[in-house]
Length: 186
Image 1 (tube, rainbow, N blue to C red):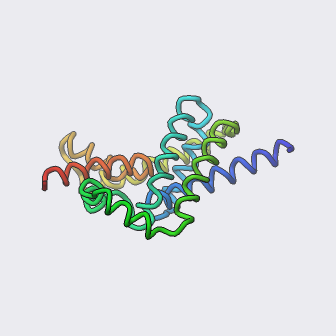
Image 2 (image 1 turned 45 degrees about the vertical axis):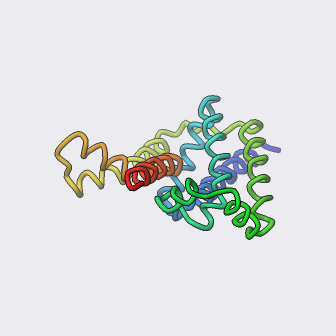
């Protein structure tokens, strides 16, 4: 494979993976979120630690696929359903799933593990592209700060975290807040 074909292939795979991650986690697909995920794959996956972390998070997203497909992103209803379900209800839920809901996650996990272990990610040395990626990362948090004009550090932090729309970060934050609300209500 020539260098240009290999680079084009890797960029296509990273773009496809960025779109797929939102679908797996149950979030709506928006251009700025997909672009942010794409740039993080391009920049961070070159480093071994981040490659391992992105691979692990992608496997978690793949395993969440069935729940995300039916119920969307993590919320209180999902957390309460998971925590209060017994074996009989799990068997009933699993028996109602189409057969491809078992094979798709398994196939995706194998593909992701092979992809993150085998391929070298592209290196981008263009500072304009890096600047655009950073602006995309900061656009929503800065917009939230300007819109709501928080006055304390806690409110600024909350506004930034609520408006930072990176899929893994948003998934963990939604899961944490949903568990916290569930435990408070229980």
